[in-house]
Image 1 (cartoon, rainbow, N blue to C red):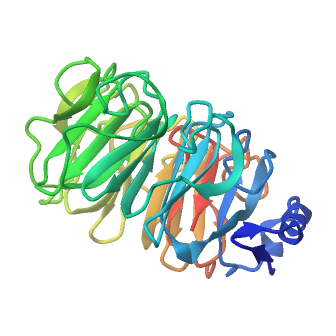
Image 2 (image 1 turned 90 degrees about the vertical axis):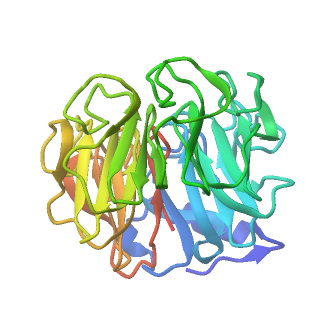
Length: 389
């Protein structure tokens, strides 16, 4: 399929092509077409295809080529607040979807169902999207915009911002992760800092007191990777073990307990971990050998182990290997594999599994075939949408 462009905007010809293919199954599209793909719930325009109609199969995000995207992060849920931010190869950021709290960073609170630049942002190296707030790392500093009810913008106040503001007292940041209403930052020295809402202990500071500026998580050193779920967070240490803290009603902390953990605890039965992935209310670890472990809430089969039983310690995900990226929303999970295929499992009411149905599955189904070119995936933090790029 060929799309026509004029000065970076999708022309009427391209819009007509996208509309015409809206109801077509995934097999009708070229597996290697170059666009970022999105599917599932779309009430806020979070699929970026110019509409607010849900999709059961992957479709192109308008004007956003996969090769130009360094990182994409979905935020919100399945309502009109869902949105996404994308970091481009040139260090600029684009956003689209719901904008009820200014989370698109464009100075307005008007939803937009197609990507446009977050004005004034350049030189960005990382992005993350929370429930109604977004974050960007630039020059080792963190910028934030959107909802600030619980201090999740980290600027010392609780006033929402429709343009990026600077997170206070934090520099030399390598990465940032976003929960529903809190944020986690990893500094170059291997320490972890958090701010925002803390009602479930998700800041890891030993209490449930909200923080309006970043605070260091005690006892965490030599951290090489961070991830966040809605109200829990994860850290991978240099020795290949994982720490978790926060909400734990369904075993999200993986420590054979369902008690809230306001301070980091070690995830049981995990070592040799290569990557971690925090999802809405569940989590995954990819081991050095390529196998995958899952734990947390599993009410819709989102752990992929063939059951709907929640797990308080990590369990293997059968048949899942060669994973290059994973992400999970409220009740579903998506994974990209090294052959370019994208798999999905869990809840599917809005078509977020991408298999042209609304039937849930506790084992992986194919959203994009091998050779699609996709190597990365994302979902809104508690949503019913999926992205592949």
